[in-house]
Amino acid sequence: AQTVTQSQPEMSVQEAETVTLSCTYDTSENNYYLFWYKQPPSRQMILVIRQEAYKQQNATENRFSVNFQKAAKSFSLKISDSQLGDTAMYFCAFMKHGVYSGGGADGLTFGKGTHLIIQP
Amino acid sequence: GAVVSQHPSRVICKSGTSVKIECRSLDFQATTMFWYRQFPKKSLMLMATSNEGSKATYEQGVEKDKFLINHASLTLSTLTVTSAHPEDSSFYICSARPVGQGANTIYFGEGSWLTVV
Image (cartoon, rainbow over all chains, first blue to last red; front, side, top):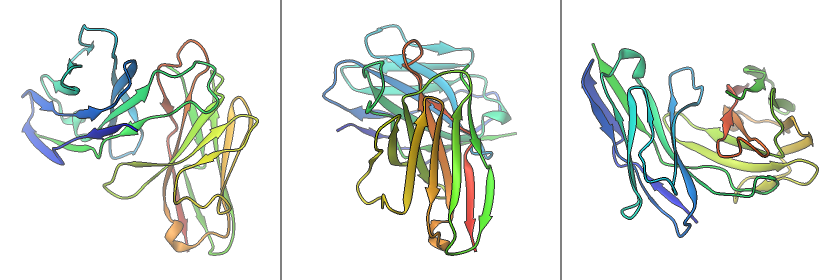
């Protein structure tokens, strides 16, 4: 079984600053995906970024980037030039590289989340 | 991106009645859908995995007779909370994993707030 650990229950930074959210995981799998999801007060789960474990290059999406350290089983999220709209819960998640036909494939294993607050 | 629609977004029901929540993948097929429950300020708790055409797989501690899951087509899964009680009040959210290309991401519905009075 996989476990995902987010050690920062809450973080607060000033607008325009850079913030890094930490995530570690434990697995015996070699192929898998890692995700960061954002959940604003609306509760909608929004995919922020995805990393495929077999890719060494760190994923980047505009102001969001990750530092993926496979050997250390670490997957941190960096948000640059933070904005008020970034205020939300952020969940780190793990998914096995399952068969594409679905049917019993495993879903996401989530961390407990980090509540990020961007101060004006 | 892929869209998952969940309905209703909010529902209030009387104690002892049943309520059904629908989860539809609008632009892709999903043989596997997942149902989560989320308590305030907590992470998502997986309740069950819904498999098209077969029985759902429930997580330990989840009552399968209380939370009925049906996945009758490749685009629709339903969660029925039977004989609902106030302690069942919660936020329920579904997700779907596409078949084939795109199966490396899971997409979420908007969630449903259930209040049992």
